[in-house]
Amino acid sequence: MTTEEKPDTQTGGKKALIADDNDGERETLTRSVEAEGYTVLPARSGREALKLLETEDVDVAFIDIIMPGMHGLDLLKRVKEIRPLLPILVLAEPRELTWADRALSLGALDYVIKPAEAREVRRVLGWVTRLKTPEPPAPEKPPAESGEDTRRQKSLDIQKEMFRILSESAEIGRIYLDLSEWVREMTKSEAVFIYLEDGEGSFKLAAGWGPAGEIRTELSLKPGQGLLGWTLDSREGFILKEPQNDPRFNPEVDQKNLSSLRELIPVPIIQRGKCLGLLVAANCQNPGGFGPEDLGLMSSIALGLSVVLKIEWLHKNLESRIDELAEAESQTQRLKKALLKADLERRGALEELKKFRPAPPRKG
Image (cartoon, rainbow, N blue to C red; front, side):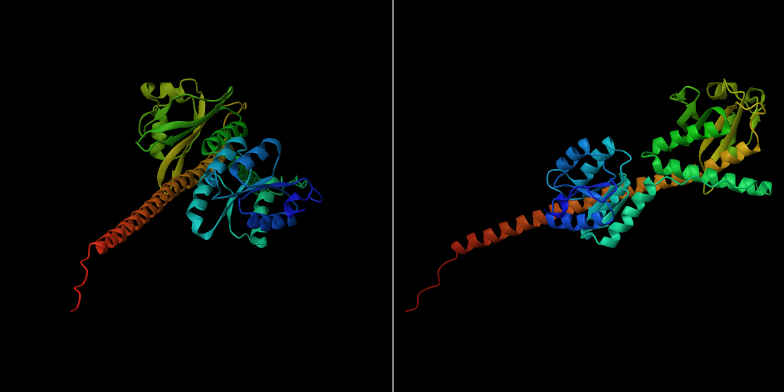
């Protein structure tokens, strides 16, 4: 019985899928993964891996970049479609790091250089454990001695919840939607909107959450136009009662965005002095309406969103760069083949010329 065929014993139920067509490397990795308490499900191809995922509930998947029949990146995409929250670790040789970086941009958690060392396997599986282990309930604390302690603890709670949303959301669009829903619950608002700059000077609605769920509508803003446009220009968040009675309210512009809003908090999303978007909470359900704590919460979320937008921009540029490198590598391979073909043709032509070389004259 090989290492991969051992029954599920002394593992606590944790399962790891290893998709690698190289038997020796797969068995070496299997021993390291089993040493961390996992039962290993082996697959020699992408097709076998997908078939296992139809019947097995695995906790982590190792995917080799280069496999016959289905490229590792194609398998990664398929797995993300059927199991979007499954942690995926990519196996790559040192010459395949371009593909490994591409895998990270597609949602892989990390990559492991082949042949996989036990300590490296322990490290990446530690990531998986931290992602899947819920935080223990916080012990009850005595009443805070000062308002400053209360504010500090609330700020920490807000940061923890933001990190939870960012770590659990599989797609960037889902992050915006989850954050808008959370802000609506935290501020007791009827609705929350997230507008993002579209690269052409306008700010379009990227996500929104209202009493009936997700808000799907075509809304857009321009800096300087209307009340929200003024907020984009001023780059300051504030609490506004009865926006329709505000002198900055422009019926032609704001009627579409603010017609049913009686109270709101608009907060700009700033990254290195540039306004990237706008976070808006509307119609507080508390009797006293929005307060300074709500404005502070909104400002904290806007700061987090600015970081998310920066990361998204970096990922897009990294993805573009990886595509360029992959295309350059492909062109290099085509050029090598063309040069090899030309060299073979040259050698063949020389051999043909030799056939027609006149014989040396005989002596005597």
